[in-house]
Image (cartoon, rainbow, N blue to C red):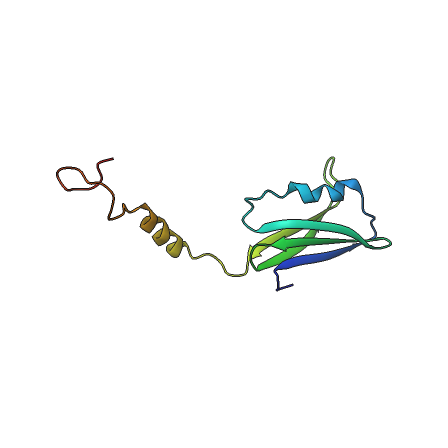
Length: 114
């Protein structure tokens, strides 16, 4: 869903269990893509998972088969709809590193006295 950006997934054949409810607390506030997760029993045997996004994303959803102690897994890969331009990021980083015009200079006039 585009406005506001979020990913809603109905998972059939399961009921809401505490482990799914605990997903909400696993998202950290500094996550660059996800602002929150909501989960609820949408209908009998159907759990709705809503991932609130900080920006438009292109999701890829797939399952992984059981391995060792892990059962089947549902995986959501999120890719930014607008990929970051590495050159633009480098320029912004360099501009933020420049000393400001008001920073003190050394006595020889060649830059910061820090």
